[in-house]
Image (cartoon, rainbow, N blue to C red; front, top):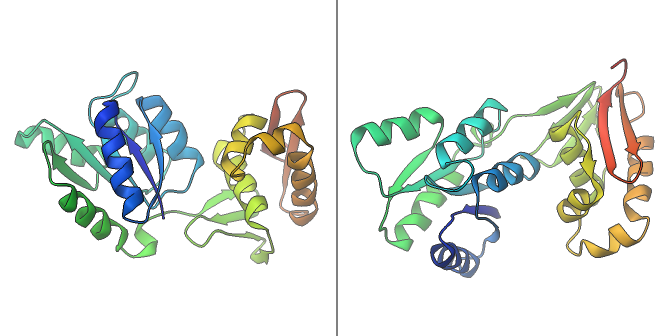
Length: 224
């Protein structure tokens, strides 16, 4: 399962990431709030551990922005603030749980497991563009109600483009999101080949996958 650790303290971020990887999770890391937000809106996480105090955007602003995009990734907020008003502010912003520093790592693991045991319907919402529907929980896509057979890489690309639509997504971001080794798809034409295949598979969805020269791709609904 993929988990995000957003923490500006390098030592604590390293401890959390190492412990989570030892527990069997795949971990992405973010040092700043804006970095955390960018990852949360472009990748499908089983859960996120987010520190309240981070540069550029604090954790509360990150969670508020995530919820405004109708994303239901479970969020465990870390903070040294422990007054009732602080806890209320965090929960009202959309945090699912709250852990006060210093904390026991085994308790953090237990809280994450509890968040991820929630029914799938409460952990995410379907994404739509035209008549294309993306189900992040099932990692599946439908056009006009019919399942589209996508490879894992094709699915990763189209989900990313739907989440960012109608913004342009750079080739670097696409490569980092859809490939383990990001250098190969950037240096070769792999991204273009996969997008071409995607176009053929989502014909009739009322959307276009547009190439932006020397930048990347974007997904727009037809007529826009």
